[in-house]
Amino acid sequence: MKRTLQAQLSIVTLLIVASATLALAARRDSANDPGNRTALDPTVVPGNAVQQPDPLIEQRTKGDPAAPLTVYEVSDFQCPYCRVFVEEILPQLDREYIATGKLQIVFVNLPLVQLHANAAAAHEFAMCAAKQDRFWPVHDLLFRTQAAWSRLEEPAGFFMTLADSAALDSDSLTACVETGAVRWLVEAEASAVARQGVRSTPSFIVEGLLIAGAQDMDGWRPVLDSVFTAKTGGN
Image (cartoon, rainbow, N blue to C red; front, side):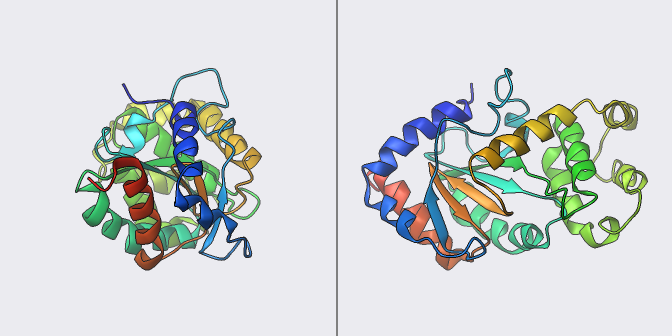
């Protein structure tokens, strides 16, 4: 059974405090600096804002559940910098860390509705897809087609056109979207990470460390390699 986010972050925060990796948290530049890292309070975490265990976490996790490292990708489907991460950086993380069994990545909802009018609808659509265990195909489609739906006055119709491409059951999908069945989950996670101090996307919770902003692999490798060594002794 997948560990709860709260237990996961509580354990790894202790490990990071004991390791040299925590020194990265001292780098406090602007919130938009890709190198901005800060220690994360493990007491309020996504997925635990409501009294339900890890809702749809398994469906939006990529990688081996036994991987020693976990990255929580706090993202907004309408955010252009999130799209850059998904298109340019995530494939490299997949090849070097996920496919090799070192890392699993978990998607966390943070639609910035004050900036992105269609973000909430996109996140609800993706969570409805997750109920059919088709989150990752929809994740990729939403970012790939971001330019097409981001400026629409009513994006719901466009989202439904993606159902066939993602091999979704249209009737179940329509019922989920129209009844707002997963709205509580999107809103609860967004509130939880906001209370953590996460204000921008993409942001990443890396084993108890918060990294705000996009970075390239030259920024990711030292963080992941340092934490991997601290947790496994390099094995």
